[in-house]
Length: 549
Image (cartoon, rainbow, N blue to C red; front, side, top):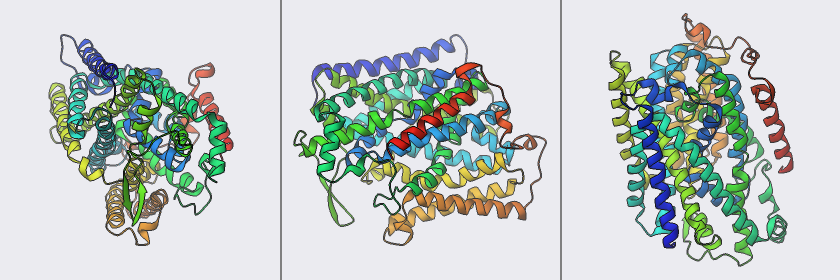
């Protein structure tokens, strides 16, 4: 339980964010009804700092703060690969995907697939994107937030989740993307600030990096400081799994997922979209140090008898009894941070929770209106589209809460969310990559690959859950993503020759003639040039991986 001052800080912060969101939405559309472009794409007015911060806030949820700290405690820096590898896929987004999206004038990514392939691809991606947003971006975030709030405040998880859902849904549904992005920018700053606070106190109490290394050495666990593990590593996250499997997950998540990419679609111009994506890439360096590392400091404190984990429960996994460390972040807040600052940490947690949900709701509203409703009723007015989007967001919010009992069965929420993504992403990553880089990728081949690839991914996922002892069940989810992707590529190539491409006047312009074509745009002068920033980010990431190899 936390003090009255901390509770007051948390309540004031939530009311502040809701007020800012409502004010932004109302101010933007004062005296008139919002058009579809204003509501769903912020009127194409977003600049790079806001895009970068919004991308980061939409990606980093309460789930990341809670689960990355848990992974730091359990396996060290290893899961930080999900953060650092994101920088490489954000470079791909900036260099190769953003130009297509901006120049084609699309409102949604399913819209892009229709222009490049056909309507069937659009319909399928819209459906999968809505379902994945509900599960990955909303339900898992609710689950992580609910666990923390129940532990801290003693409020039933479902009651706290419903309250946060209603408040976040209020300003998101009323204000549209402009309200979402403005609040996300604020929440990014609060989230990072809160993470830095708990990093400092955990570092200080653990005696710094040197003492942590000493404790790990005493327990023969220095490998917890390594980001690159050998083949056959028991974690299932060897260097091969990371470098072969993550790009499949990452390209879908960062380059082909509506919830994420929608921030760049609302950019003022192509340069702002590109630099905004790269700016997020630089920010993604931080989570390893301020989200994962504190969990490793907590592990050090536990083995130094400076942290009490007696309140955590033991669970049975595959016949083995293990400590359930889902609540480790909550214990770090209550045991390491002074009163008064705990309220700021709770505000940071709420920032991650609310920003993730807000971004997903806005994307669901956009997909439901543009890609489903207007698809069957093309004469629909802009006002009606906005209304449909608002209703869709509200329904999605309710359905996501209903998924919480099912998803709570995962031992690690972070591994759970990536396990789901590993089975959803391969066919979508495949059709996007081949679509923009291969002229012969045909509409029928993409359609069949999306259908059969999604069916294959679902079948493998179900087999793994029903009987994890099968050969398939023993394959690490990252490598499974790679294998499923290779199967999808093989499918699309075969189908492209069986059903040769017939380009339309529109699709003829929607693939790169060469890998160098998207790099011909000059960009801004100086350090803000997207090429310069891309090289700088690559060099920094290379140096970091070399240091923590």
